[in-house]
Image (cartoon, rainbow, N blue to C red; front, side, top):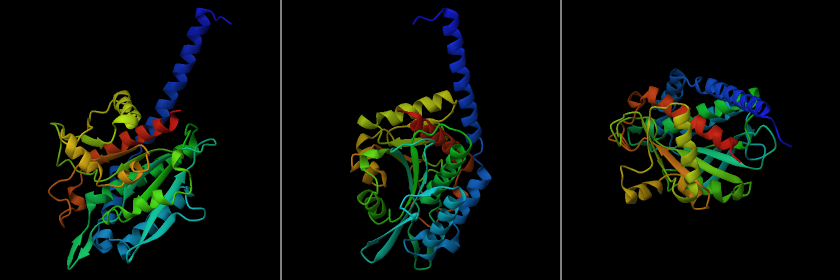
Length: 318
């Protein structure tokens, strides 16, 4: 069947108007990212009362309680049958991962996994290592994204894949939490489209270039190139003035080494496309001075928005 030029033009205009409406609607959700709300979450996680969130500490349990309460409030689905929590034992420690799902709009067996570790060094002697950037910042971004996608799923169609949000424990113990997570998956590993792991994303202390508004994304080579393609497209389409660096300060060898130091590497070891999103290490990393007042909240919100667009469009892709 052949269509007249007039019909083709009308079809094009209709498709364009639908796409524009979707962009407008999605942008509305990105605009909901609140600096004040993120500051509230992060300052709670990095408060002295949580004593640095060491595995199996009172601060760790308080973090789990907060996360599971929010997941329930946002009508997310437990990843482990009736529970959000996966418990495991590593040496003498009891570790706990927390995993909740925002279901796709229609039936899908595919998952995008968004992860961030919540443990830190804890209290050593009388010194508290609050880990505001490492990694209360990543947990804050993850929880913000979980709420946004819960709202998207409730209010409009469009999510073609399930989005799984996981707070990992025991990253500071040789990534024991993420290793246990991928070892005991209740779904086939082939159903995980990719993992976006967020670790230390709250500062502007270590810009690779001149722009202090930047983001470092490692692991996009080879079969993971589709993530870079989507991220670059989102940055351009939504007009983000932000440097995205796909290596760690231009060093291929250090990029490879640094990539192996966080939880995405556990996924990569199972042949799951995985990237690390970070703002880099700095003078406060693994020190008692890694506190919430050093977080750059405007840039943290901006990075959150860009990751929202990335994950949304990954969820749309076939």
